[in-house]
Image (cartoon, rainbow, N blue to C red; front, side, top):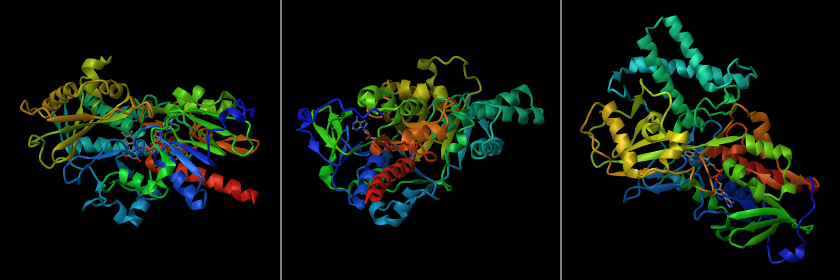
Length: 488
Ligand SMILES: Cc1cc2nc3c(=O)[nH]c(=O)nc-3n(C[C@H](O)[C@H](O)[C@H](O)COP(=O)(O)OP(=O)(O)OC[C@H]3O[C@@H](n4cnc5c(N)ncnc54)[C@H](O)[C@@H]3O)c2cc1C
């Protein structure tokens, strides 16, 4: 790499001198800062563009006695085996338990499945395909783990082929095939929210297994996920976190000791030995050309930024005074569409992307939406969203009297200029082993790791998650610790 600096020290003598600048106060940035402190690096600063800490972890409390968290971002601790976040909660119950709420696991086991004409499908029928789907899903995962290449490119092709083989063996009628295909399409929509991609046509089936979900069910974070963020922030001095400090440019200048220069939009600048970048991969895609002085970037890094993908997953919360219309003892209503139009017109047809109405609280339903449809919904007003979803719910539950929600709240992760989407995945042009590792690789100048990278998208097996972000922060703190230890 060309290490020529563009600036002389004179120009930037006012820049605040520190050892390490961390860009982003999300889970990765805060855990890196906390770990560095524990290693004895005390001269560091965390620059956060927004007016809150946590990034894609953001909890609000919806009721007056503050016992019901509403997660705008991350929702669950995914599994327990090997999940460091689960460990933290278990080891620090007093810190995380908000009021009397306990860590509890979610099993959505009571499903009401019906189509857009209100036709109900019995659990035995619905679940038999769900069981098959899960077996095929494990087969898809095994491809990457065993380094075997499928004849199919996308996850959708792989799954539809499995379904067709099954339906041929079962000798089904055209009508039965249509229903099973509609159910499969529902499973694929759900998978987009889990995988973070707009449609499963984009996700590489051969790379699917690179994502590893820790064994075990999903756990709700007691009192809300922001408890984790506060827990991490409490490990570092308050004044080392600077809110409303959007970094505009990272460059180098002539200074042996602190050659990195980090300039913020608000006019503040910092000189440092090392810079850790934890912004989302979509933020990097959009800004890397202006964020980094071109001499800092390598071709490998640019290719990784361009190749690792990130789409949109949003939530819509529907609040009701009275939810007695919801099927009794039911955790979720799963709509399936037997007559979905081929060419979807976003304005009238975004509803076809809806795959669940989850009963999250006694007075609240949660709807997930992904991809282009999510990006469209982000632009709609809440009344229109409420009307469309009420119309769908009325049809699926065959009940014209279902009231409109009293309140609708939607997340807007794509519109957030400092996130620009939800979480990362590996598409058909990507290779996890190469592109994720290249994204994580520091930029070295004269064998010194000057610009380091963390964040969920840089974790080879746990990308897209809080635990991936957390471990990536630890990884980079350890890298710096080992770098200095090796020099002693
Ligand atoms: C809707 C949704 C649901 C999710 N559900 C789950 C779940 O159930 N379980 C799970 O494990 N994960 C979930 N995730 C994913 C999880 O939230 C993320 O993987 C994780 O929080 C990412 O942390 P991070 O530190 O890598 O990035 P971020 O949280 O994005 O942190 C990066 C920070 O950098 C800041 N920043 C950006 N640009 C600049 C700049 N120029 N200057 C200064 N600061 C800047 C941003 O404002 C941000 O605060 C979900 C995410 C979303 C959006």
